[in-house]
Image (cartoon, rainbow, N blue to C red; front, side):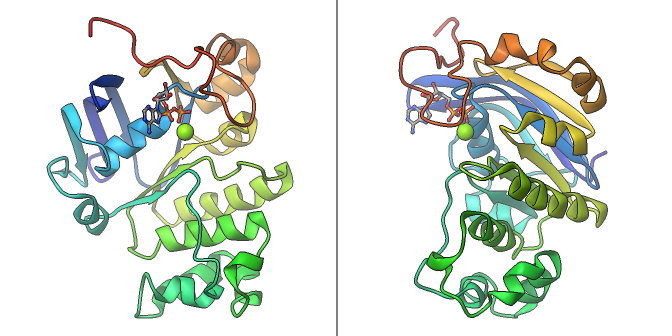
Length: 252
Ligand SMILES: Nc1ncnc2c1ncn2[C@@H]1O[C@H](COP(=O)(O)OP(=O)(O)O)[C@@H](O)[C@H]1O
Ligand SMILES: [Mg+2]
C-alpha cells in the first residue's frame, strides 16, 4: 500500500477559511481512485493541498512511504507526484512538440506522450492553440507525465468536452494505471469515472462523506450520489456563486 499516495487527516485552508477538513485518502499505484462531489465541495482545494500549492493546516501526505507534506510544490513533483490541474492550459503559441520539450528536454516525455496519445503525434508540429479542446487536454495530461509520476492527480479534464472525448482521455488514464501509475481522478462525468475506477470517495462540504467501491456506487447510480449533488450547483460550470457552495462548516 505504501507505494502509492497516502493522505491522513489533511485539513486545507484558503486564507482563514477551512475548506477541507480531516481528509483520509489512499491512492494505490496501478489503479484509478475516484473523487466525486458537487461544485464547491472542495475537491480542487484538496488536490492543491496535496500538491503543496496550498499549505496544510494539519495532517500528513506521504508518497511511496515517504512524507512529502513539508516539501515545496516542485519537490513533491520530483518525488513522483503529478498534477493535471483544473483549467490548466497549454502554451498556445508553441507547437505540441515544443510544449513537451519545455517540460522535459530529454525528449522521452515526447515519446511517451505520443505513445499514449497517437493523436498528439499526428499534430506534433501544430501550434497548441489550434488544437481542439480534447487534444489540448491530452497535452495537459502529457505534460503532467513529463516528471514520470508514480501518482497522477487529474482534476476535471472534461470541462466543456463531449462525452466521447472524455472516454478517449479516460481510456488513456486506464492505460497509464495498467502501467503502474496510481491515479486520483476528479470527474464530473460520474458514470465514466466510476466505470474505470476501483474505489470512490464522495466529498461534501470539505469532508469525505462516503467511500465505497466504484462498482457499488455505479450499481446504486444517482440515488447514492444525488444528496451530495443537489444544491451543489450540479452542472458543468460556474457553480460557486449563490451560496450553495459551502466550505467545511463547523467550529471556525
Ligand atoms: N481561490 C479561491 N479563493 C477563495 N475561495 C475559494 C477559491 N477557490 C475555491 N474557493 C472556495 O472553496 C470552496 C471549494 O472550492 P473547490 O475546491 O474549487 O471545490 P470543487 O473543486 O469541489 O468544485 C468553495 O466554497 C469555493 O468557493
Ligand atoms: Mg474543482
